[in-house]
Image (cartoon, rainbow, N blue to C red; front, side, top):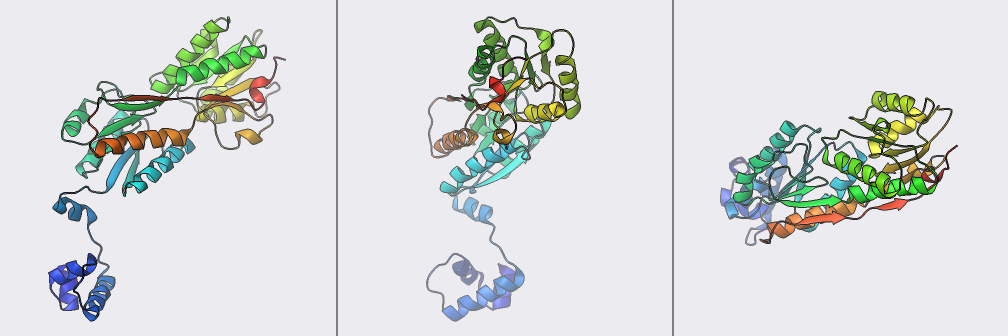
Length: 328
């Protein structure tokens, strides 16, 4: 502002009045100031201005696993829409499923004085957040709960969804059902495995550990699992994919297979309805997940002091054909 004032030949106070659209500035003076601003590339530091006024910084933080995953892209968009309605911007970072990276991002956002934090946790230890929460920074966990603190949480019905997937496959004659999912250390993967086990019990089929793969999904790991599960004297006739990434790797591994098993994916994904046959999914509204978490966060920002809440959103089966194929 000093540079702008010097170039325009006015006081710093006059520059302040112009950039804040205050009255009582002569149009010629305002024009000189705006020309100086344009020439120097001056931009207001909104964070400093808001802190000086004792108001908010106008931002919230969002930490997800991977912004490149379409699931988290949709989640981010939903959060942004709610944030915009509250006059806030969203700072987003990817933890890459690394708890140290998660902690680094959260504390970095807190050091920037964000008004609140939304976290898809990568780890199970969140005691580092207690000082920030006591200092007044609200925190909401989404898709997965916090590990060792009590905080607001928004989840989906992971167990119920997988139970429904098993029931659908059994209904169409399958008894040898494989389950491929992410690492069991991840909350959603562990809960969906629980749902798979429960679904087997409820529907009167044996739970067979040899038909389960719980690993970080890669083309190689899923390809190996497909070769192991679909060969031999008693192969699987159906597969449940534990998330959208597993489903994509699974479809690629099956692209040239002689025999294609029935398939249901937990999480919908792009073009799933255009494949042959279209992929049946356990779907949930990702936008609703983001909206619910963001709305809960802004309720806290605005002073809600009620006890921490746990919200569980429903899922539903979308039967498109791949999960309705009878055993060959």
